[in-house]
Image (cartoon, rainbow, N blue to C red):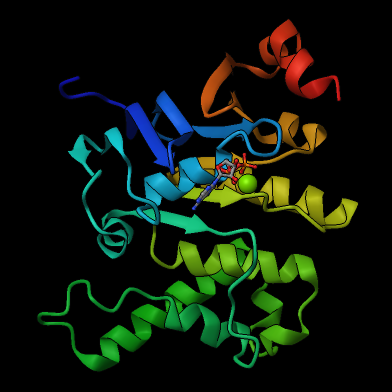
Length: 247
Ligand code: ADP
Ligand code: MG
């Protein structure tokens, strides 16, 4: 495919682990400012798809274009710099640092160094930390040690650490696992807010949550896309009911 308006265009993507195709000739297109939810049974290949997009896993075949730029052979750290942010299932915050410090260390230092005086950078970082803390609902906890936060707050902090980099594509793998009902509601609102300025891919199982946040839903099964559409289309698809929703 030539130039597209898609922020992400994945085509004919395949990865084999010892001959087993965890992702099998998959095509996937994501719009700007779209929040896509990926669902499907365990082992469907959802996490592997995110691994391939962020560069943690190398594709065996196919193409991954981010803003029309071929990413398939670009190393993971450069994909981060280009604007691909990824949250893994287990949170990776610094428990001994404060919320402020966790956000501060996530500020991308590499950008726009020339001409930026140190004190100006400090101001810029502080402003950005405050804005992000506000966005993730932790503005009142800036001095709290991260280890003392609730499970939900830790998850939001990690999302905040990703937001510090201002990713154009943000990918979250099961962000509400282990959260209380109230925390799930707050997370749904948070995700809806932050996708106004970026595109997002969220893997999730909780269908009530999916319904709240998804613009479109992709159903994966055995490394392939089984169905794709809005919530209603997907929920009424007999193949989706058979392999996933009916269980
Ligand atoms: P999901 O996230 O949908 O539950 P995964 O992407 O984690 O599924 O896994 C898809 C399949 O690929 C599973 O059968 C899993 O065992 C296999 N798989 C994933 N990563 C690897 C790996 N690094 N080596 C071998 N097999 C893997
Ligand atoms: Mg998974």
